[in-house]
Length: 270
Image (cartoon, rainbow, N blue to C red):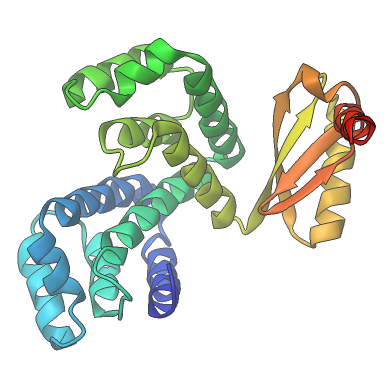
């Protein structure tokens, strides 16, 4: 999001935080905000009407109220009201914002149950599984497959094995991809989960599993460097050979033997 939409999203997020003062309502608000996202995606005329800066804010909130008052909770309606009173750089930013708020509501639900760490790990791990299982990826990406078939498949695979919030988010990403791959959606949802607690995600590649002590030392070191809490997502990659590489956002810290060997080979070939 750019310009005005960034400020609008910040205001909408503040509204969400206020609406979710009761954590028990968070999961329901997440589900309702996903339904709002889907409605805005389906109805471009409505999307334009609710984001039109030339119309009065009262007209936009009135329209939202007529459409949603009997379909969503008062807390969710307050969030949607804040959304439609903001100024958006483009109409498409409105459903994008609604989706992000839906994910954050699910994160709030997980956080209230002490499961936010598990949620982040589960989104990351399932994204990795999908990336290495072509048959599963094809089944979940098939646009002709009924939504209920995808829901059933995911329930069979994951129910009781992941947090309820993770199952809801993974199912949402598979059933309503919004033009993204499942892996991309899960990566975005994991980023938002980290953002809910205002911490960074570090993608770590290492040749072998890190011990609990090594993980703790790495988190401490990265948190000191970036002055933010850091969540580790670890990928075991034999090509690393030794050491590890760490990516946080656009920054890449590479201390692997594999990288140094590749650099040496390039120099010898020059």
